[in-house]
Length: 185
Image (cartoon, rainbow, N blue to C red; front, side, top):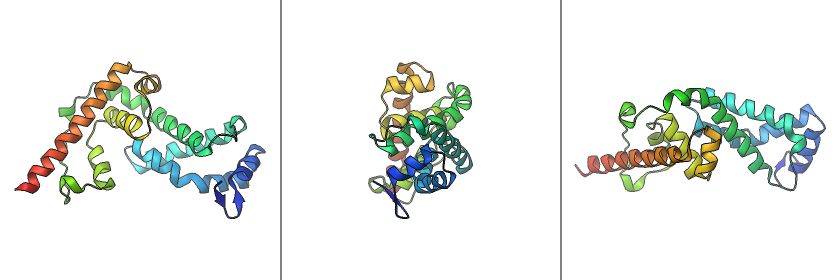
């Protein structure tokens, strides 16, 4: 179990279920970084991610009574953060569904050759993707959702999820290939 200043995770959760504001604050502090890391992948900027995280924690505290302590808390929290982040973006994404890859081309450069990309380089490349592709790539490749789960969450056909994932991967491949060619010169 996670430990926060000598307080076990199950005790934090038990006290949160009782409505203790002190323990809610401790739980928030314990998992803030984890939640922000997830939310940032679904947000355009830090402010949007922070709003989604705060909304997610409100949902956590409002629904903590239904949390089964026999299950992993981080997994429960992760699902809430992902869904909250996506819900915040859903309105914008409806307008982005028609955006084509060519409409969002941006220049991406890195000092690393393609074979030495680190996590920061990959996250930077993902910023080039249109929002719908970036969200689906995150959900499928990073968070492990199936196309059917993505379709249900984003309210799109599962075939569209597959197409957007394929386009995202192709776009990322093109960026990596362009970088490799640039470093060969």
